[in-house]
Image (cartoon, rainbow, N blue to C red; front, side):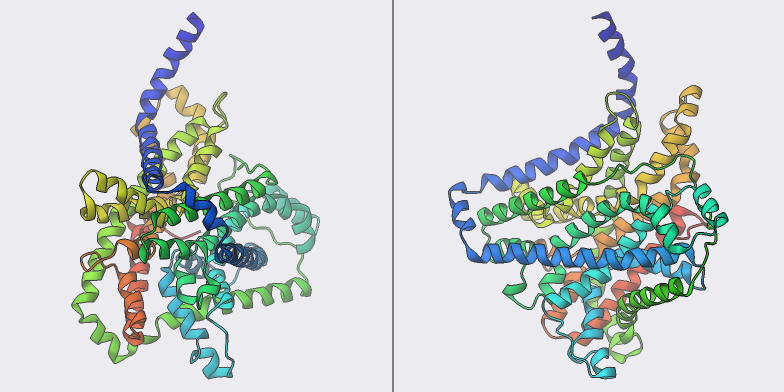
Length: 538
């Protein structure tokens, strides 16, 4: 008993230091739980067997799974050779391409869709130049959009896997004269297979829960997904019972899929001695050059044309007329009013998760907690943001706040929707600093703000990237705002969607230029202001 009391006394200082992080995580869990509880309170469980017997539901589930598997599989298949090429070859514009990948990861979906329509549409560039008609509205269009959005993300995740390879192994493979295929088989694959399952699960969940892409390019009910079905149940029918049923069904499917993949996943651990991996030249061959050239060309054809197409209206007379529209600038103001607090809130939540996770890293009795915290932060990929927003709105309405709470619901849901991306940008650096300097800080008695001041030069770039990702994701969101949007809460993506829906395509294309330009400006401003002068995107 005295031993237990002594152990409790020793743990009290740690609990006091970690109390802000614990509070943040508990608020995250509490709001998520009450949102789902509020939604389930309006549900009638007796009707759920009837929903399960509907043929339409099973058709939606099959299509959701099929398009997500195809989209994530194609993204990974292209990303593997592209990441290998970027790792082993230096060429002019490589840094610019990596920065383009960083931006394309968080480019507003509705803008990406517009660029894809300009390139692949019925009267698009492909038809004008080669006379090729692409069946854009349906599965093929959904796959093009998902690969455009997710292949850069998968590539950057695989490049992180390459960063785990010790420099000594590269040096030894160069000394032995290994070729690209031999190095891939003997060295690279051992590390990539630790990263691939996580990258595949992330891209699968993003494609499975895709909303704007399917809504815009689905082409009808036969190409509908669970996310779109939830939106229809909430927006058009306000059927909370059916929406909650579909949401729980989506959570179950995503959870089972993630458990199945992660069960086969090797443990991914970063070497604490690695700050950067040097590049050593391997034996080259014509086969490696041809392979790199083919996949690099495929990547450029997938990524560059939609980006260029977005800026096509820049020099038109309509663009300058659009800039004079008062509605455009009201929408810009609303988007910034949502995105800035959402990004700050997402970064604060990620720091709460990160501080708690890195304290428990490798400690006896709580060594399992970091992985669980990371999985908890990824739950928003399984639970539709539309459903969380609706449940939170209903819970706030019970307290009499009603429609006035719509803005804060949008801000909160955007913050938690960006949390998985913020965590991926932040956690590797936090773990690395913990492994390298934990014992030094403990021996010198450095804690709290004193530690953060010392670590600031080392983590500020990761913090800048995390904030930039959250800012752009919130700026380009069209899911939650589609439910709560009104004349007083009309964001730039929703304004663009309304223009396209009313067949004002030229004006919509001009608004897309403003939106993507604003995203690029905010992205690099965040990196410069927070990340400092050495703000290159790695």
